[in-house]
Image 1 (cartoon, helix red, strand yellow):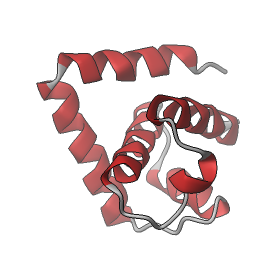
Image 2 (cartoon, rainbow, N blue to C red):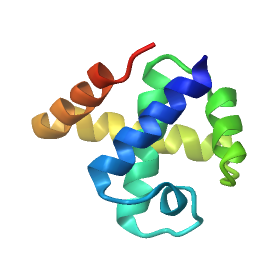
Image 3 (cartoon, rainbow, N blue to C red):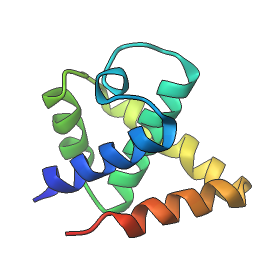
Length: 100
């Protein structure tokens, strides 16, 4: 069940950033891709989805990640949501669009 939610978030995030799934799960550290991954972590975490689940689903897609990186990314997006009303609205729109 949670994997379906994860996959819906992946679809929404890749659409928003105009990237494909392969790029999202690549080890590239381009700012846009990092931001997209951080947003994915945040959305999953707020669902709520445990860090272990997020880590597993990322690994299932070929992207190994540490808990500390997940926590850092989630914190990064939380800060951005508090400071940027437009970004907060984007997050809310994605959260509303994902269902199950």
